[in-house]
Length: 196
Image 1 (spheres, rainbow, N blue to C red):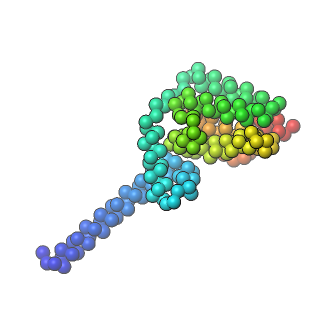
Image 2 (image 1 turned 120 degrees about the horizontal axis):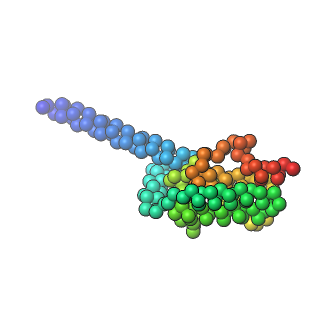
Image 3 (image 1 turned 135 degrees about the vertical axis):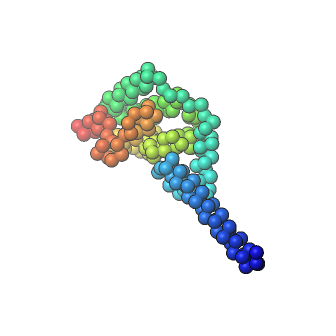
């Protein structure tokens, strides 16, 4: 083989290796985007680079795999569903307290499923692996809950918090996804209460 042929062969091998590596990266990225949905973009905005964001998401998957998650038995599922219905009815008379109760109920459900409930950011990270599509709702609900505890939330904000909590709650119960348009995602009792 002549020196020119060797150089051309080495270049072809390097190009093929670079293309293969790029395809692996694109495949991993696509898998992370599909798995994490809107959470992918949220983490990307928080991190310094795409590689740091993707490293964080892969780390979340690794930590999530270490959890001992448990499915709810039918009796527990029914108990939680009933508790949620009661909570929505209470919203009519006491929206301020109901948002705190919604936060507590969701936290109990998260704990019973086997997720950590201590640090909120750790909780979000663990939930993001299987519940990324409803995580934005949970963030919004929690933020309204915090504003409510400072006396800064309006009744409409409180109604939205219940709607947002309901999205994650339904996801954790294994129910059909909750609608995401404002017209479709109104809890019946909370919505009725604010429109009277």
